[in-house]
Structure formats: structure tokens, C-alpha cells
Image (cartoon, rainbow, N blue to C red; front, side, top):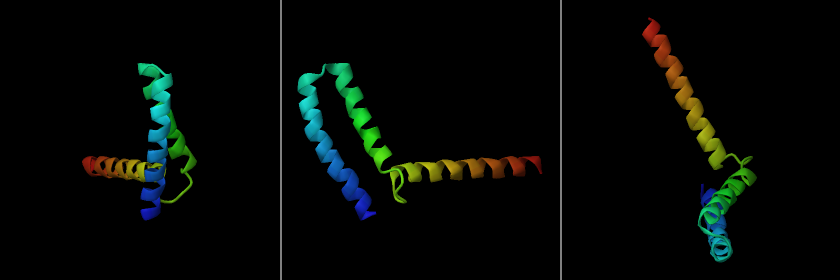
Amino acid sequence: MIKNILFYGSFFFIGLFFIDTILELASHPYDFLIAVGMFLGFVYLYRNRKESLFHTLRDTHQSNLDDIEEQEKEEKN
């Protein structure tokens, strides 16, 4: 958990530095797209770790699908 916080935190501050530079070069709609792209890139690079945001969202989604399946079984009975 702490490694996860340190990883995303460090890239957050690195991203702030780059975003500050990009804001000087890019106009309004493009700077936001670049920031989102950088965030998604960092998530993609960290995707294979067990504690990554990708796995957390995937596990949550699978849990929701399992709950829906159980509810459908209960409704049929």
C-alpha cells in the first residue's frame, strides 16, 4: 500500500512539473488532454503490480458482476 502511494505520489509531482511546462506551450483543450494522457500512461505502466489501480478497478468490477449474478439467481427463485 505504501509503495502504491509513493509510486503515484511521485509521478503526481513529476506530472505537476511537466504540466506546468506544458501549460506554457499548449492551449486550453490540449493541456487537459495531455494531463489525462500522462495519468493513463502512468496507470498503464504500473498495471502488472498486484496493488495497482488497474487491478483495484478490475476486482471491483468483477465483484459487482458477481453481485448482479447472485441477485438474478435470487429473483428467479
